Amino acid sequence: DVKVTQSSRYLVKRTGEKVFLECVQDMDHENMFWYRQDPGLGLRLIYFSYDVKMKEKGDIPEGYSVSREKKERFSLILESASTNQTSMYLCASRKGGASGRTGEQYFGPGTRLTVT
Amino acid sequence: SQELEQSPQSLIVQEGKNLTINCTSSKTLYGLYWYKQKYGEGLIFLMMLQKGGEEKSHEKITAKLDEKKQQSSLHITASQPSHAGIYLCGADRTSYDKVIFGPGTSLSVIP
Image 1: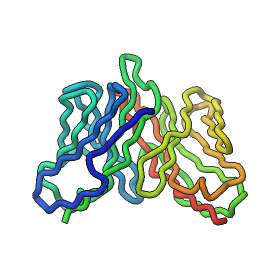
Image 2: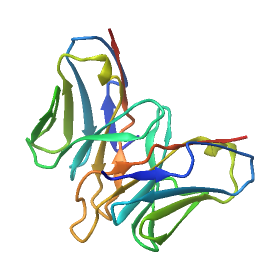
Image 3: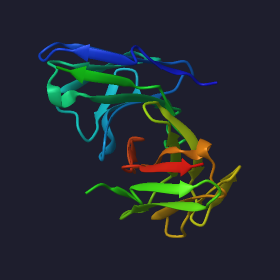
Image 4: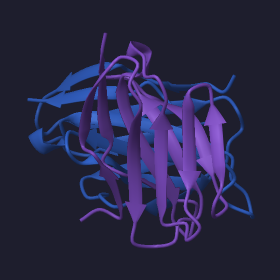
């Protein structure tokens, strides 16, 4: 079974702190994604990576950065956490490649981040 | 407004009843995905539709994609409490393998 793991299920941070959210997948997937999920807004794409060291901005990249140094790991970084970044963060991966759009995403369990 | 719209926003049904959830886009969909999410957890893949007119079923859940590939429906027959959760549709954008999602439909099934 494909497994996508996230470093924490729950996290509480203070305003201004630098926050790292880690995501690891074990299926050699090319594509990895970070979303945030908020009531009434659904899942919104923050960043997407289609290969090691490659990244694309999603719909709401402001206040976030990402790092993909190894194929299996995709990190989301909040440079200076703010209260409006309190949310559920979901990581996903899927097979990619030249043909693109090659199937379903596999999601991690999510990290519920609270910024106080 | 979002690229993908879902209706209804929430649904409460009696156990044993049938129900339908809709997902609509103003653009042609290049791959449509249905996921289920239990509250506070990650998403579980249900089905993928790619061709206009395509229909897939798994247990008591059937998903269809219309001929124009702009609307999909998810139908649950004889609902059970285990069907409760949030149902989300997702779709491929045309470039760079990005996937976007609708806002979700919250389903409650009353025993």
